[in-house]
Image 1 (tube, helix red, strand yellow):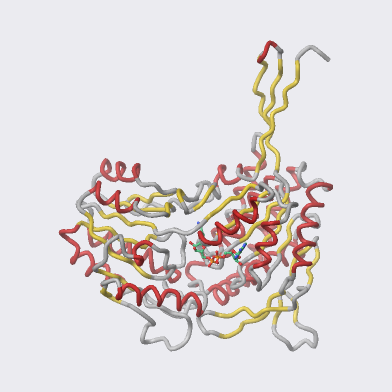
Image 2 (cartoon, protein in one colour):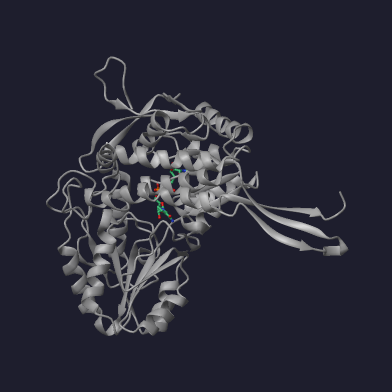
Length: 495
Ligand code: NAD
């Protein structure tokens, strides 16, 4: 990060292209603290020429450098990056709280320290991976042949990320793609350029990554993301964001037949079976949807409860929501901070207004908390009185909003949960392990939590069924997404 010429201007971050920290061709754009609505500084605003140079640098580093073949260099650089990020963790923590509005408590986990520590996983995986496997000798078509299975990097990865968990998502792409031997151009969300730019600066200043291996291109214009998807020099597009943008990304990449990895939206169900501890389950559902103002793709936003206990469940959930600390993300007690922007706040408010039009009502919340007069806040909200046909129950709201739906038993609950175009995640609560396991097996989602179990971990693949995405991130499966498969077949005894 540098300070604008004259020394007294606001802090400005840089692009990282071909190993150099550079200003943006389009100047700068502001980054805003969503809790205060104040501009906290400026980010380099890349133009199309910057993106073109970044892709060219990544291509050259892959085609002409040692990166793709030198596993030890890759492991060394990733471990160096992890150490350097840990050394600056307090500065990264303040940037994350200020720019993302992430409650500081969560920066000790999945908002920052979790993903930084998890960089160990792709480095360790690369070190121990079977890059070449002996498939033995066979005689297909009568020719004795020694077969080898070889895993190789694809080439250039274009990584495009959203605003909600910038460190987690940026690092869950950079780590495995780089460990696999690919080179990367990362375009982060326009709302959270600083989180990515700080990683770029740390790479340039404190690591031995060869020039061009990692390029970080911040931009106010989402069109630069589309440019990255369309470019024929990019072999893999790894995208996290909304399902609508994922469709545009897929279309843009189709002309080059690029591999497209998609981590998209969700409308995940929290299923409470009739033998569960209703109070505990509803309390857990209330907290799950209110963390980070509900801005989590896999957060459970539909609460399915037994019909005969519907009122009791709504009351328990609303009571738990009422106890959630909303407000200043720098306060360690805060669970629900602000939404990222006025646009997102207005979008969420639009869905709350729609819920009333659709015949629902609020058991708590419904708009800005009365105690906060600035910042993009929405109070944790419980909507009652709708069924799963309502748009409020079907569409991703991306705010601290829980729609409570009634079910008539296990089969009905599973059917309602699966009646969605999304399939990202789900939760099941039951006191009977067999019933919980049966429901979990029938849910069409990439992850399922049973009675509060946690599926998020560096060694656990994450991703969606249906329109929640393609491919997996994290775990060995996520690492392997960044690898091509080659077979070398050598005739035996003919040389
Ligand atoms: P978004 O789709 O608006 O933007 C995501 C990224 O795509 C940004 O960097 C944006 O600039 C870029 N972009 C926009 N238009 C583009 C185009 N035509 N071509 C290429 N890139 C383009 O998403 P958002 O609002 O930043 O994030 C919220 C969404 O992300 C939610 O739908 C959420 O569910 C989803 N999400 C999914 C996961 C997951 O792992 N499944 C994780 C986090 C967020």
